[in-house]
Image (cartoon, rainbow, N blue to C red):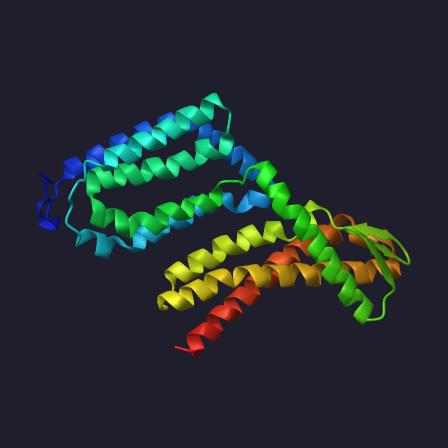
Length: 281
């Protein structure tokens, strides 16, 4: 038989229990979290990971008025979800599989929420907790399987655009041969980095918006073409400058700046898309 706690019957001891569980969770996942933070600081593809827990926490923070009105109905079967997450953590540690170790935290959080707070509360907190997936780097084998086709695709599109503006270019795979130099569209230039960041941003923007479900999905999925478009602009601009001024243009500060440009330009396009969707309400 489920025990229901109405909003008016809650008391401080619940907060104490939650703090104790949070402390135990941090202790259990401390090595995992430290390794994850190290990846964020050294892997440029996931440097946005530092912001994901903050955004998730803010999502929950602004939901406080809604959460206060939800009756707590602890669900015992949430314990099964919790145990499944802990089993995933153990198996992943034995197999040294970092992705499964890290994603097990999300399963554990959902299990704890369901077990202690109930189905209604879990339903409300599902998206903020699931949003934490954006902070977990993809396994290298999966990343490479996605990145390489994107390198080829970006190279092919850049070749066509450069030819349209009258600059001679010859492409071999992901290598562009120009009059002054040869450029290789490497992993960092594939567009996958900006794509992962853009998806994280568009997901947050869609969640915070007051759109209908369909528009939220449109805003979220718009991240893919916008990130690819911004990256093509970056590659085309770099190749165009390199064809006239040599390979030094494609290296050093200008190369790093072009990466920042891609992110800012993609973000501007995402904000513009959001404005257009607002105008259609």
